[in-house]
Image (tube, rainbow over all chains, first blue to last red; front, side, top):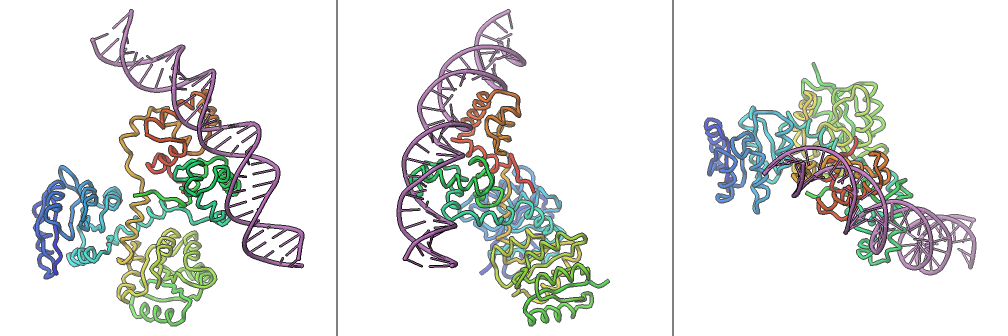
Length: 217
Length: 217
DNA sequence: GTGAGGATCTATCGAAAGGTGGACGACTGG
DNA sequence: CCAGTCGTCCACCTTTCGATAGATCCTCAC
């Protein structure tokens, strides 16, 4: 079963080069190409490729925006972001938008082909040249490791903290736990005391800073 | 110039296998091995290897804790985390602690050797099997781009939101702005109205989710 | 100028949150 | 066995918050 690929690049030379490289493989079939983001989205939605190889720098709708559109689609293809420019904004933007892989254009053809296969297998791939920066950024964004303080919280308190940090009022938490509001107030109070906090807002902040709750994508 | 490597693994068989694989390469020299995290840290600090190949699951001080120690050292070696168990906790924990690469133990010897070279070159490397999960988590952690909604807030309101999201009470915000508390209440109220939120806790969450305030590293 | 609109400030009042004290069952180590 | 600890629960009372109405000040268009 061949891998159906869409190639999007505004420069015809690059587009044809990519097509030649990929079509040279027996298990890969470039079914369509596009010269800008809008066309890539349109073609991808109608032709349903397995993998989209997307240049990030394109006129009109750029690659990152196009990736965002594709990621929002129903049967979203796996997108391999490709760029000449090794900029943080491209790397992080593409991954944030939903790219499954990221390669610099100076990569070997074999690497590109291997990347397409990896993506088709449901795996991801990051150019080793930029992996270090991704890791650094990831570490900077990551919640701190759970602090010993969290062991202080009982399961009930932990649960209340999660609900609290999602913005529920005491009454709503009480309803969710089928308890009286007064009870929830005690739990909240013990949470604040144990963690050395003053108000429920501090508790919500604490939950975010310690990764007890995570942003929903 | 050879790459000086430390191999840390609690199982002697694995340790020797790694040593054989790596020492078989002309440009790699396994200078020392360790059987637990504490020994790895100690040896690394005295022998100063270029690269540390670290099993994550070890008795006593485990690999992740050891990576954290090494990362805190002055001339920290590049750490390649190695594990049999494909658990999020291991992957994210190791990268957070400061690992420069992450491989599953079922990787080919060539991949391992290549990874050591990549790390020595200052680059990073993530096992393709887990790259997808790293990207997903990264995307989930990344702040969303500033939303147009924020243009709705006046400078005063924006400032109040920042203070609110740091946990200040209305009274404290009032003091910080040299205004009456009643005034702050109005600002908070307008913020909630404009952003479609219900309580100050929601506002704090909103600020975190939209990157108006950021976790301090 | 002047009037419309927005930003900032203030005051009041019902609703929610927070502090405190205490009750009850469950588990634990003399 | 039973005393002590811990988790969970509830009610009372004070403080803070949130909704509302209105006062100034500014500026920009007409």
